[in-house]
Image (cartoon, rainbow, N blue to C red):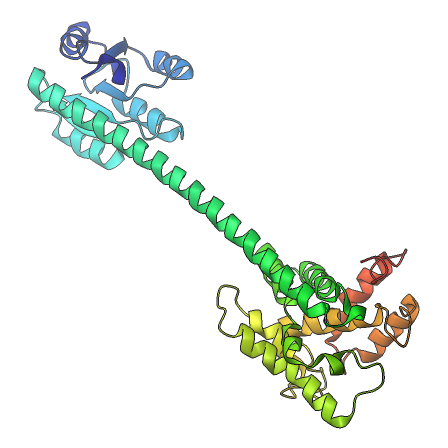
Length: 345
């Protein structure tokens, strides 16, 4: 074995035992020896050995005090500690096993036994460290791949959102704004970072079902006929069908399916009422309506901020969940310059 591979620290008061141990170990390892707990502490402040040999029959030092000091320090806790024992130390060996001793070597020291047990412990510790490093490297690689996939997924969703919004020149940027408003509402509602991220993605694709709606209906400048309105409402189910098979983001289809449900039960497609409407859909419903009012249309400009506030208040409890309306109103109160509108999006 290459001598540079490991350092062994001997903690022992018996100079003769130290000399015997050094004669056995020094041809293979770097060996240091000390004889007090204070020296142990000073030693560890400067360097970290690969293994510690501790004599059990010391008068000035408690071998368990050395053991506990090594094991309580996070930086040294994994270092193997070996007790040098005698036949009379059975009770001490039992206690040592319970408190973290890695191995026991009986005196008088036999070279072949000492080298075999020390070599095995050091090799196991090195193997463990190498394994931990490899796990760390693989974890980092997996995390980089995960982030790459996330970035790609976001780019795809943004592209889909832009494709949807492009069907109507007056809805340019609509899906991104709805997604951002929904994320802000979720944040203020105390949702976790993961939940905020998920609702952003869900918001991006809430209108994906419009892909299946004829352009002449989406871009019609006058009111829709009853038949056209029925076709337009189909975008909720179409969106749910498109996203229903995507399981990577929980609830991805929820926003598309139920963002037009109303709190009083008069919405579509299923006439859900109150808390029957999934929370995500209730958040996106408020965000969607807000963006519709604060975006330019063929028949009107962006609605004044105070008018939007009043519309939200009137819709609280009938069209919208009152809790999420209150959060949106709070966001509007803070938006003194009225930046949350399509003119600034």
